[in-house]
Length: 270
Image 1 (cartoon, rainbow, N blue to C red):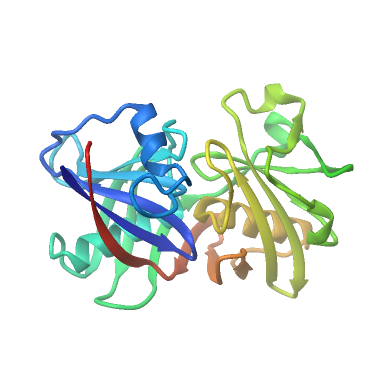
Image 2: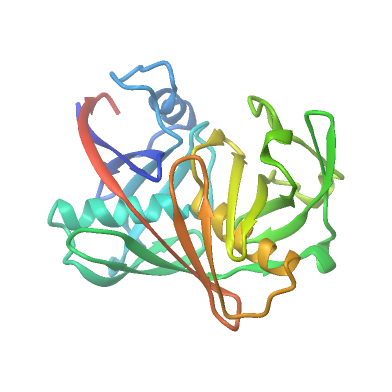
C-alpha cells in the first residue's frame, strides 16, 4: 500500500503521489481507476493525478501530471500550485521562490508558508491568426473561439451569458477538428466587469471541472484581446470553484495566483 494525498486549487482536485526516487510507474488504466468519481478509494475521485518526482538532472522537482483518464498533459496551473503546497507543507521544500519542472518546461512559483500561491505560467499565445480558430457547437449554440496556447491547447469562446452553455456532461463539438489533433480544452467566458470574467471549462481527458489553471490564463488573454485592451493587464477570473487572478505582462507572460489546499491522505494499492 502507498499513501496518496488529496488536494485542490479552487476545487480543481488532484491525487498526489510522492515518488522522489522515481520508483512507481502507473498505467493509464490504474490512474483512471484512482481518479474515478465512483469513490473507489473512499472519496469521489479527482480531476487529475500528480506523481511528484525529480527531473532528469535531479536538481528540480518534476510534476508528472495525468488527466483523470490517465492520459498525459503538458501542464496544469492549479495542479502545480497544489503540488507546491504539498512540498512545503510536508517539509520537502522550503517556502519561498522555487522551480518545478513540467512537460512544458520549468515553472517558477512563489510559495509562502500559508496563503495564496503564484506561478509564472510563461507566455500565453494567441494562435488564431497562425493555426486558425475553431467553431464551438454546444447546446444548440455556435460560437467562434480564440485559439490560445498555454503550453497546452485551449479554445476560448467569449459569450454573452454562461447560461447558454447548458449541460457539459459531454465534450463540446469543435470544428474543424484538425486544428487540435491531440484534443483541446474548451472554455466559455462571460465578461462581467471591466477586468473580470466568469467561466466554465471542459478539460480534455477530465470533463467539466470546477477550475482550470491553464484555462484561466487562456481566458484572461482571450478576454483582453476581445476587449481590445493593451498589455500589461490584470484580470479576475471566476470559475465555479473560486476566484483567481491573472497578471499578463507586456510580453504576454502570465502569472496565476490563487489558493491551494492539501486535505487528506489515503492508503491505496499502486
